[in-house]
Image (cartoon, rainbow, N blue to C red; front, side, top):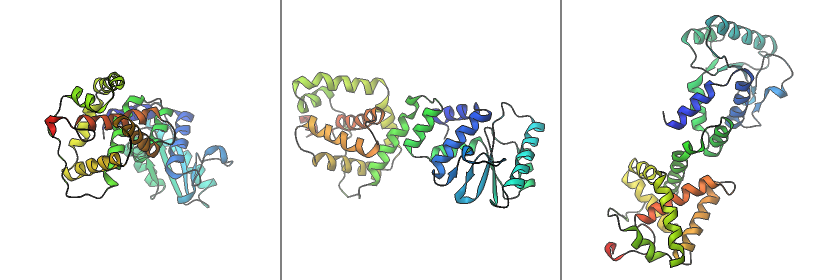
Length: 293
């Protein structure tokens, strides 16, 4: 994946040096392995370890240079391995060398020469670890690295859509909505007069921020069967709510917000509402106009 989000992660991780890089690895590995399986450097008294993955008996060595210098790079590898072999190897059989750059081939050969089963972890590996985190964890890492929140938009939308798809069994009921209707007519039919201006304003925000294009692009990438699953799920959840359209849409919003967020998260709320308003515009939920009956 070479999305703007991953590119931002790449730039930020690559710019972390020395102890800043070590602190980042501690936070990342605490997420990946869990607090019960990762011992951070502050809890290690002996020398030569920047962290320990207890579950796999692995001592972690971190190196965050500002530039790659072969002589210094090689010496760092040798010194870290010597500290590991002198202080830790008798208790922990594995050793992992982690760095903020794409590890040069000569460095990988050096690491493997010192220990054949060692684990060199470079920038590409770190990006893969970040990509495999849950959305909440990835956002936490993003906040830590000062990654712009706007770059998480597609991640939010993809998680919401994929989760809705996977949680319903597909039926042969085929719900199609190819024709675009005139949105004001749809709004007037489903909202009270005092609420119309508000929903138009909300719609304009999603439209102007390109969120509907993001949703359309994501849905285009799914198989027809998966898209139908999404439609069936939304209709089923909507029909299980009571009250007028505005009330039912709000109940549905709150249902999904509780599912995807551990707190009242404005970012998740924004994208959940965008998905629902998009599907409303596409005539999937709400009372239908004469043109679509």
